[in-house]
Length: 74
Image (tube, rainbow, N blue to C red):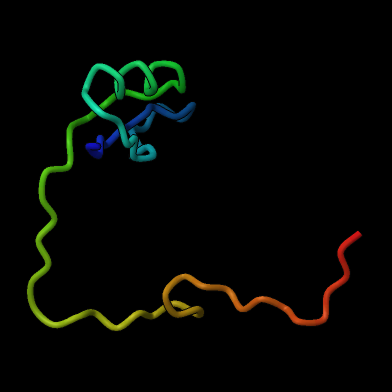
């Protein structure tokens, strides 16, 4: 499987990054993108991380929101 990066033009006429598409090949990714109003911008081939890890400055570490223990499901 490969990761394809997408983009789209919003109603404000600005170009935005879209969701990544995970597909076997470019043709399949382009079909999925077209069906969702996106354009394939390219394929992610490598991701290099250098230096020291950056400390997260978000309220929740690792993008995990604490699950409330006292909750009612209806």
